[in-house]
Amino acid sequence: MKLSFFGAARQVTGSCYCLEAGGVRLLIDCGMYQERAYLSRNWEPLPVPPESVDTLLLTHAHLDHSGLIPKLVRDGFTGRILTTSASAELAEIILTDSGHIQEEDAAFKKKRHKREGRRGRYPEIPLYTARDAREAVAQFDTVPYGEPVHLNSRVTVTYHDAGHILGSAILEIAVREDGNTRTFLFSGDLGQRDQPIIRDPSVFRRADYVIIESTYGGRNHGDASDIDDQLADAINEAVKAGGNVIIPVFAVERAQELMYRIGELLREDRVPHLMAFLDSPMAVNVTEVFRRHHECMDAEAIELLDAGERLFQFPGLKLVRHVGESKAINRICGSCIIMAGSGMCTAGRVKHHLVRNISRPQSAILFVGYQAQGTLGRRIVDGSKNVRIHGVEHEVKARVVQIHGLSAHADQTGLLEWLGHLETQPRRVFITHGEETSAQHLADAVRAKWNWEVDVPSYKTECELD
Image 1 (cartoon, rainbow, N blue to C red):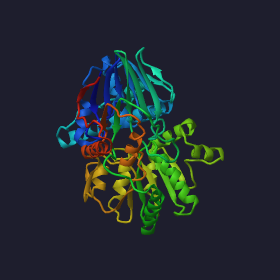
Image 2: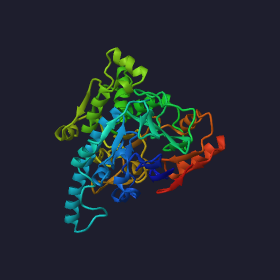
Image 3: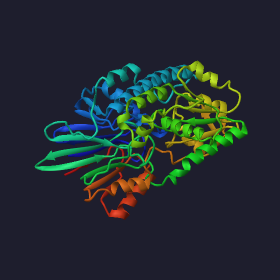
Image 4: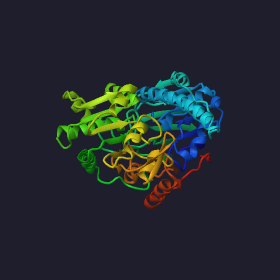
């Protein structure tokens, strides 16, 4: 058996692992790199021939886990892509949108480089197109939670709740070789317990090999009960100053959770009843997917739905699809809340709203999710005095607020609690999907607590397992 790490190894994005065992070659995720330092990897060929991969197992739909699937298919992968029903619907939206963005970025770069008389760092062609994305989606095959799927006579995979986003999964892979059965747990992105809307992460009593994320492996989120207070304070202070609240949002989960929480604040009269916008066609489409997949929701959400509550709607909220509507937001006098993609400010409509507000001391830029190294969002939260948006430098004068507790990722305590449900010591634990310091902090914590064998693999590390 061999386990290789083709991404999300000592960095966060580009999740991709290859497991060769039981007569099959599996990819677990095939994500896009989003950190500036690693963007060139998106253009590199997969370290194994795509046509040699039997099955791709997708943990969830986020771009850093699914974003290179269209490229993989275009380059020769013809196997099944297994994932949950909700993830399949979300991935179709996300990948098609990504294909459009790739095409638009390539056209923009070509035009700009021609005007500036220079060549760019990356090719002036799309990484893949919307058509490539649609063709890749045709290879999706959905699986229910909790039911083993036989990949061949010796290998099964079972999808379990990960509590991260709608449809997200922990993969439990059982392999029979030489009369022994070995069990692998791939955490995917592991969510926090007791969060709104979706169910808590599943826990496990045993596993031989554990591959666990470490996005927040080096720190804790703090008291989750403060989230609504922080959100209310950010909104109220911006309104008092006469500015807007710009919230870069991830279209999946974070946008829906924010609508849920802001709706609660409005119903409790904790914030003014002002106009709010979800300015993201993808987030609007994703919200419709949420409304169709009650099977992924927790008991509290089901109870509200049964009582006739609309989880993702409140008075004053407008869901924005069209460009003209998006531009019209900037003509509004007075304060408003603008939730727009993307969550790390790497693309999308949020950049246009940042251009209008980032140099206004009255406005607030409110970050509610992880900001990867090298992204525009990370530069803003790290305190950069000036940032470049659409090729133009802008001075950062707006108030910058970051709420950590809203993260869809478990913190160090949550990750250790999840591992702590194992009743027997795993043969090895591999820590991935975190910046190197975060991964090493979690590794040290696991060693100190249980003295387990822990690895923090590097990019393209290959491990022979027994």
